[in-house]
Amino acid sequence: MHCSWASPVSRNRVATAVGGQVWYHFRMSRLRGALAAVLVSVFALAAAGTGAAAPGCAATLSDGFGPFGRGSPPVRASIGKGHVLSGVILSALNCKPIRGARVELWQSNARGRYVRATSATVLADRSGRFRFQGPYPASYDGGAPHIHMRVVAPAHEILLTRYEPARGARTGSVRLVLLPQAL
Image 1 (cartoon, rainbow, N blue to C red):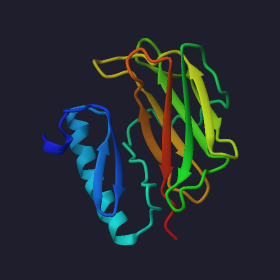
Image 2 (tube, rainbow, N blue to C red; image 1 turned 135 degrees about the vertical axis):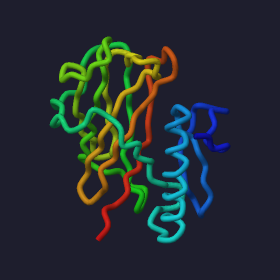
Image 3 (cartoon, rainbow, N blue to C red; image 1 turned 180 degrees about the vertical axis):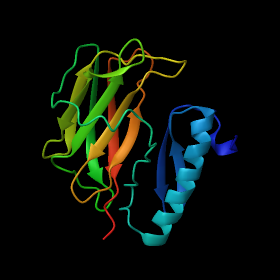
Image 4 (spheres, rainbow, N blue to C red; image 1 turned 180 degrees about the horizontal axis):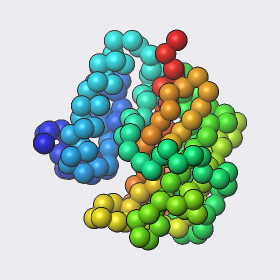
C-alpha cells in the first residue's frame, strides 16, 4: 500500500484537521502510514461536517494498536531513568486542559515484552499536564523505539496512540487532544 502524502518523506508528522484541510505530522511505517491516511481523511470529513473541533485544536488520531486489555498499569510517575516524557491533555471541543485525565503508558522491556514493571499510569494535573520518567524506550522487531499510551477522560473518547522519541533524546513532549463523546 502506498499513498503519496503518507510516504516517508519526513517520518516526523502530526495530524491536524482545520477547516477541511489536513496537515499531517505522524510517525509510522509505510503500512501504518496508509492506514493513517484513511483515518486522517475520515477525521477531516467529520471535523469539516460537524464543526466539533475548536480552531487549532484538532483531535489526536488514534492508532488503535498497543498492549491494552491487560488492566490498568499501576499509578506511578517513574519506572526508571533515562527518558522523561511530559505532555498536556486537551479537549477538542474548546481546547481547554482536561484535569484528571488518566494516561496509561506501556513500554516494552529489552526483549520486546510488555510487562507491569515497564508500565505506569499518570494523572493529568489541573492544567492537563503530566510527566512520566523511564528508561529510553526499547526497539524490537525492527520497529522504532516507542511508548504506547491510552488516555481516558470523562465525557471524552478513549485515545490509543503512541509516542516515538527522537533518537537518543533524553526528553520529549506531546500534546494530546481528545474528542468529546457523542451525545
